[in-house]
Length: 113
Length: 115
Image 1 (cartoon, each protein chain N blue to C red):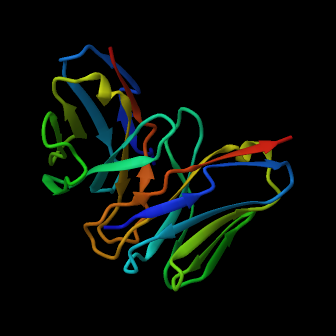
Image 2 (image 1 turned 90 degrees about the horizontal axis):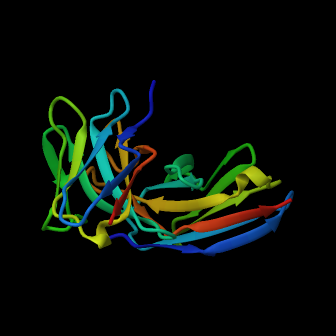
């Protein structure tokens, strides 16, 4: 089955700097890669996703890149703000209709004002 | 359009009691996933259900745990004879259709504490 590795586990950046979180996956058949943000005491919130037919997707300060050959994908947050502080999870899912999302272990991002 | 609704938000049970966690998917969504999260850890898949069917229960312990998603009403995750190790946050997600590249939206979770 799918295995997702996520790095780093913790990340501290100064406000205004960029943050990058990286994930690798094992199943070459996986074709959907969402990212979730989880604030303390809340459920994961879908913030951006990418499908295997594109290499990059951007939404304001957030971008995700995908390298299918190397089986890794990354989340990029530019101009970080204190409200970006949260735990971020990457996930991957295969093409079969019956496969659930498999998550990385998460990255705790702290944006220091 | 209300999001995924889970209740209760917090549940305290004594060892040996039963815990029932409810999840109402987003309107128009017929696929439900349950995940478990331990403190400082990621989300671990438990079970995937469609209306009246269990599609994948490979992540759910075979004893004491069961799940259903009836034709009418919310999905229920049931834990019988709870033990301290069952203490965790349980999240439900829903999606509108089958297919691996479908967005899944999470509820706010139920935090189960076993005392």
